[in-house]
Image (cartoon, rainbow over all chains, first blue to last red; front, side):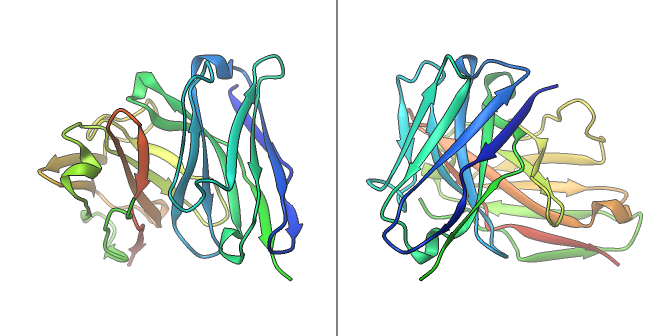
Length: 120
Length: 111
């Protein structure tokens, strides 16, 4: 069974940092584009960042560019999201998601999410 | 990267059909048919319903169908069932940078 499990969320003050991690099982992240998508409380889905399977290509949403960094560890089959300079509006459930080229890069496997709360 | 525009809500009686629109710009869709739709129940992660405009992953009922015309994509849920009451999101990406965008989301209510 293909599965994604996120960790690393928590309560942090504005301006603080966290490192979110996502562990995959049942498949190799090296073969897929991996993404982070977030959802604020009672709000819609927002695409955050993505990394190509071989790590050669990264991209970010406008609202996080320059503050968030996506990376992956092939040996551990994990993808991380370093979130810095956190703002109140970064409060959200952060999902790790797999994009499948067989589905024209639609998001076919989702984790359950890790909650980031930014508050003073 | 502005969100794609969806109606906030849609509703129908059991057995009826409901159609949700998803409107963007030409740059959002980039001339590609990389539109996907997701269903999300409260407190749950989203689930892929439709990809490449009108294709369904295995296990998704054929009551769910997608289409696209110009800069507007649509999801139709036919033969509404109580279990279809959920939030629905469209998504697309375009260009060599593969930057994604989601729709604003639509809450479907089965009357």
